[in-house]
Length: 589
Image 1: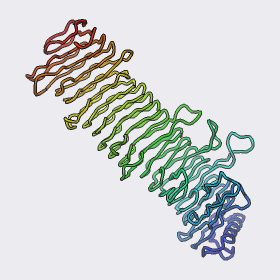
Image 2 (image 1 turned 45 degrees about the vertical axis):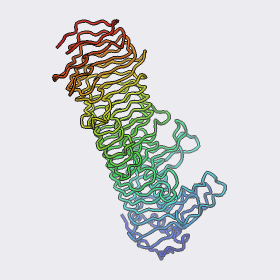
Image 3 (image 1 turned 90 degrees about the vertical axis):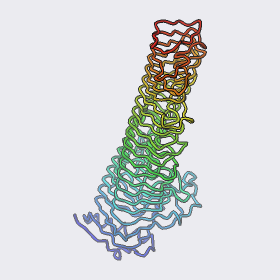
Image 4 (image 1 turned 180 degrees about the vertical axis):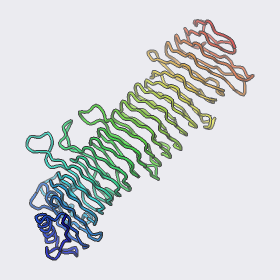
């Protein structure tokens, strides 16, 4: 490989930050000559280089074929004190280094500075859609292949520090689509772009790693103001450009205004091992992995990991969110869309009105093996969703409720460990199964503790195998209505301090069976299982007794209901039945 140190004087290049047009033309001539001579590596000496980044010959796209135009098979080694400054202008688009439909290009080192703080935003000619002036780039990778951007310090562009985009468009007949391919951005400092620090719109096999990505969108920026935005252009279910196979690893994100990373509409995107102080989102993306990131804030604002929904034309997101550590946000993980797995995340110190693990208008979502602690707000919430499972999560210390299910269908909460919370689970206007959960509210102040499990009359519930120790308020309490299903089976309620561990009001043909209820009160009284205003409830094979000398009022009370069937229960004390009830095979103990 032939290597060459650029002769700035030979090409009329000014090193003092003046004469933008002459300097830019000199660079382009020097690179052209080197390429024709077979030189593949150029060292650029220190200096301040003012660059004309506007292609005046293109009224619609002045950022294309603009600035320093890098040829194929070229490595540019920028001296650490080589600073390229875009000349102040009023154009809606510009580029400092343009890498367009070439191959095998590397840019290393140096500094690039946009002119956002000297830019003239007042004019945009006849192009009203360009009035935001958001197409000013430090480096524009446009349909190129095999590009490496390494160790470059880029800041203050009116658009993005780095743009990775395609030539042409997909799914149209008048042009050929040529995405940027095999692009690597590493060890760079990218700061203070007015829009995004990096955008990938039409790129494939893009690797972004070990960069410092900071302050996108600060000082009255332009939407969306993301550290990294993965966002192809499309209409409905038709893509005109696609970001594919993008890997974002081991970067540090700080101060980016809206989000650190958003996979708005990309495919096969991996966001792994980054440190972030703002949100990471799978957006409408498909086949996204968000893994092993550390997300930390100090002000308890924003949601750490988010989504938007399913992309048009697809069945689901197929997103995986795993192994992340989240601390100090308002909320933890908010799932929208469909087909999302959330596992092995640790969430702590959220705001008191935030939610650690949530769904909204989502379906087929699995939350498993997550840990939530030192968080006073809700820990799990399924809202307006279907086919949601909360399984084997450790939920510790909510001042509201550990699990809330509202306006949702087919929600399963299974084998979760709930401790030191005000309330275990609340089910509202939903169909839900609560199976084999440990709901231990004993460490919460007894005067403030609420129900371990509560459901309303708009819900269908199956409550089975839950373990509820020492409840000071009702362990399982709910209302029902005709047409709703209530099944309460095989729950273990031990050393109850409350008056009524299981209490069901209203509805028809409920089943309350196989539950073990023991009392350890400090005074006499209480009902182990009580129904009120129900019709046809089956109360079968429950065990109800006191472990000390204080007697219950009644182990089972159905006197305020009708047509109950009280069968095969093992009880201490007398039953309180209605004259319409059927009572058989109950055994005193």
